[in-house]
Length: 175
Ligand SMILES: Cc1cc2nc3c(=O)[nH]c(=O)nc-3n(C[C@H](O)[C@H](O)[C@H](O)COP(=O)(O)O)c2cc1C
Image (tube, rainbow, N blue to C red; front, side):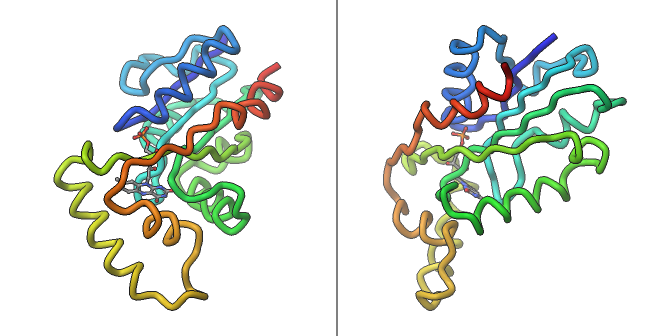
């Protein structure tokens, strides 16, 4: 059995999950609605990046009791450009820290780009981004990585980098 599971706070990851569901015919569910992850043999987890953590991923995938013979795909949705190799490597390393070894070793990772709408952010997130932005602006140009650049370029704006074509490699892998 196959399932698409997603962790999304403001909807961009949910949009990707619904599109993937439509294109593959696999049901998509919020991570908080998943009761028994062990009944699925193919799990596609789409999670938004929040301060490096993949929303809901650890909570959901750590419950897998035996990862052998399972196909596990994780796709992150973040603001930093996934075409940047350093960014992709950082995401991968962070996922490695968030998952038990046996599950991580069985997982294939994809990185998608989301968006942000500052007018929709809750107080806590707005405060965090303000703090990160002020710190980012002070960095020397050669110290600005893809994450920092994305924060500076999009601060206080409404932007979407959603690109449904970026789901194609995931669809190919599911087949
Ligand atoms: C408090 C906060 C922290 C974030 N941390 C990251 C991050 O570490 N890396 C990244 O690429 N994007 C980061 N983002 C951007 C989100 O990942 C991006 O807006 C994503 O599309 C949100 O998905 P959602 O709409 O499904 O919640 C952050 C956004 C906020 C508000």
